[in-house]
Image: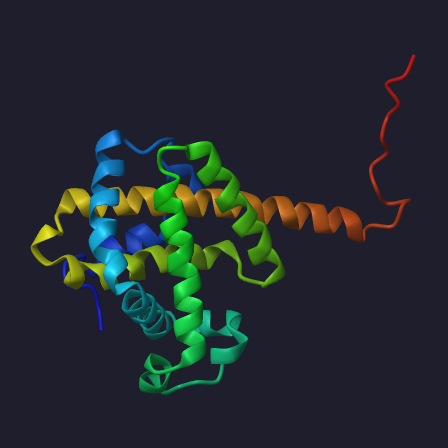
Length: 197
């Protein structure tokens, strides 16, 4: 399996970009392209979810360590027919659908993605894996979109995923800091200075 259009170097570049490279805002043209393509993708939502995760586990087998149910599954064919993988793929696709729906209200998308990042702290799913999902999503939707797929559309989806994964990383880090603070004994916690007169 592999991406038909994105070459390995571009794929690797997308996966390894830091959150400093996250665009501050999606252009109106990007948003419209994403929304238009989502109307087509939505018809194959379960299929895309499965293809995305099988591709993820194939190209990055270490990601299976985050998924308790799939950790010991070596047979990718068995994964393709797994009800649990289908269910998880649908949850991720639901998040993508919610993200697309919030592209006109970026503050709502920010809240959604930060909260998801916080919950991923508790799943023990670190940010280094987030970009991999975006890459595999792009690989999974290219054959579905066929001649509708263009380099501009690819850039639009990459921009959205970079934006979302940057926000998720922020949420993960906020929750990590919060949990660390909660784990400190009262003596170890930084003192709060009284601002009262």
